[in-house]
Length: 243
Image (cartoon, rainbow, N blue to C red; front, side, top):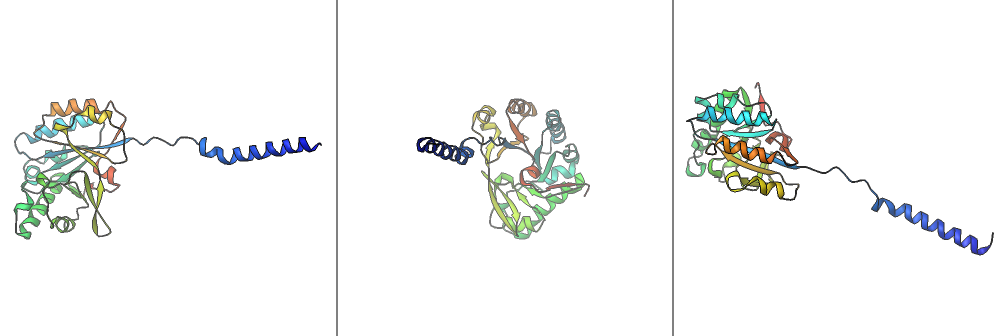
């Protein structure tokens, strides 16, 4: 073999080895796309028409086989247990205090604690469950909130804009989320935005007619989203039925 031929072969070997080494950087299979997580959140605060509203909402969610989360004022659940029992196992149930009171307006810690405790107790009794999630009326909280929730075995707090808090390692830890009000944030905006790792929490309340909710959801389900309950979002069992 001539020196020239040997040099050519050696060069070819070096090129091939280099290609093998760097090719994984350029020719790796694409990983699975992560769907945008969406948590539909509903608040039930009014006693009048609450059963019919919840029945209609449940029908809409069942029609599309959607997971969701519903927060109910304790007094509403106490007087109308169907507001709790009408929902399927795919729907988490949380409390909104007992009388839908702004907790920051109460100076007495014991009275604040009663509001949270009695609200959860009413939800649990109405649905024969153990609810471990909470949302403060008007999203109003103060420095007592973590003590109030932890003393009631509540593990998830959805009282805030652009975050939710989970009880982990004996403290509440902030988790970021994009929180929007349905009446001011149209489904087309969500359909057109770039997916992110942060979940989107879309909030409705019982001032929204269920016809509006049905139309909103009809639009949303045309997108490639993953609809999750609070339990599915957090990986915690936040509504234990049959408790």
